[in-house]
Each structure stands twice: as structure tokens, then as C-alpha cells.
Length: 112
Length: 234
Image 1 (cartoon, rainbow over the protein chains, first blue to last red):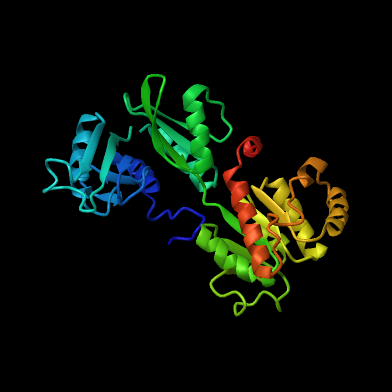
Image 2 (image 1 turned 180 degrees about the horizontal axis):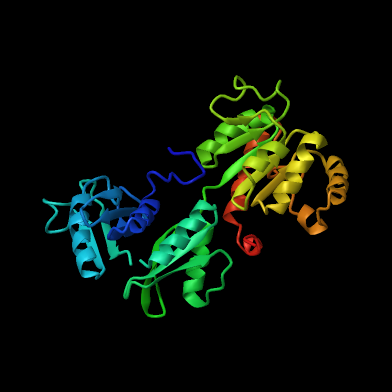
């Protein structure tokens, strides 16, 4: 458990997103906005993505990050936010799903 | 997300100030709400709850869906006094989610042997608090019994609006302490915030039991903070 009371600037997704923005990069921010069952990351967790597909943070235990990054690159292109849903009940579950049996909703938006 | 909103949010987080990011999931518009900012209606109630619990969630209000992302600074507990009570309090508080720092200039007390795995400062509170100031997400427990060590830290905790301020000592001891704090310039209303005798009244007898009482009182203060924190971010 991280016990520092201060932000871990090198790993904090929102700090990294701000840094990317200052470097002139296009950035998307993904946020877990709802969870059901044993979701691996709590509501409010972030994954930040740049247009090249670089990312920091997590919205699951690594199960769906790949799919979120792909969607995020589209969102950077279109500027239109998307709501993604993942879970074992999904028809795509055999491809990208949460092996833990939980379900999550992820909001993906462009920064700026 | 609005770039300016992200910049502001990160500023608040760096400064250990609480903020709730409110995003309208319908149109994507977002804004920062700081603790004590007035927000009316169901949304205001939900935001107040997010500040108190630290839980992020989606809410329906005004016919729209909002996502409230609560960014609360990590609470911490500063203990003045490397005494027997602190030896029990430090590991218990850490397990409960309140990292502990212990300050005691008496080098015979503040030894790493007595306090393994604890942030320990064998220095005067004046010096340590200058480097790492107290804030409204910090609790302070003064347990040395020694006015020379406790008083400055208590006054600093009141001025910084620490969410919890407790001081060890009987009612008689505390009455004398009140006189000294008044002389240091503390207001009577400020001084009334000090929990003394320290700890929830659970009939604690041993140092470890007193530590439980102090920790319980700290948690209670944290989870019931709200109205009194309104003027905190000035």
C-alpha cells in the first residue's frame, strides 16, 4: 500500500495527462464511472491515453485496457466522448472481459 | 475534460485540498467544486456526501446524469510525543488508513528501536511543522504531557484547522493548558475544538487502549467533518 500523503507525480494519471497536454500532445482520459460485482479498480480510477496509444494508470487489472486505448484513440480523433461497458455478460466477453466476473462502465473523453 | 479544469484539479490535489470534479455525462461539460462551495438541490446533497465519504459515483439530478469524482487528500495523523501510547497508536492508525508521523525532541524517546517503520522526527514540533505544515486533512494528537513540546503544536493545529485536535491530560491539566493557549493568542472557540481528555470514552486504561480511543475519535472526527470545515480553505 502506498502510504505517501503526497501525490506520486511520476505515476499519477491526471498529472501525467496535464504534462502531456503541456507538451502539445492530444490526450484522452478514461474514467471508471460505475462498477458492479468484484470490479478490480474502484469508481473514479483513471487511464490516460495519448494519440500514439501510450497510456498510464488503469481502469481494470489489465483486462480491458487494450480495448479502452483503442476506443480512446478514436475519441481523440472525433472529439466525441464515449461510454464503454465491460463485463463477462458482454457478447465480447470472450475477447475483452473481466475474468473476475464484475462489470464496469468507463467514460472516455478527450482533453480539450 | 476542460484543460483548465484539469489544471485546477491538479493544483488542488497538489496542495492537499479536497475537490469534487462534476462531469455531466450527457454533454461532457465539467467543473470543479471545492469544499464549502454552495451547490443547491439534489446535486448539492450528493456532492456534500462525496466530500464526507470520499466515494465517487454517478448521480441523477435535474433530469441529468452527473459523475462525481471525489478527490480527497489522504488524511494523516501527527502525534506529538514518542511515548507508550504512540507505540500502539502508530501501527493501528496506519492499518486504519491514517499514516502517522511522530514528533518528539527527546531523543531518548524518539528512537527507531521503539518506533520501527514509523516516520519519526527527533526534533521540536516548531522545526518539523515549518517544513511540513499541518492542514485540514491532518489530525493532531498531543500526548507528551509537556507544555514545552505540546503547546506550540496544539496552537498550530488549531490555526491550520486540523480535522482533529486531541490533547492528553486530565480536566485539571487541560484547564491550565487553556490558560496557556489563550496567552498564546488562541481564541476560546478554537480551544473548544480540542478533545481533552483525549479519546472516546470507552474506559480505556492501558496505553494501547488509550490508543484505540484516540484512533476511534480521530476516525469519528474525519467522517463527521463537514459544516465546520466550510471556512477551512481560506
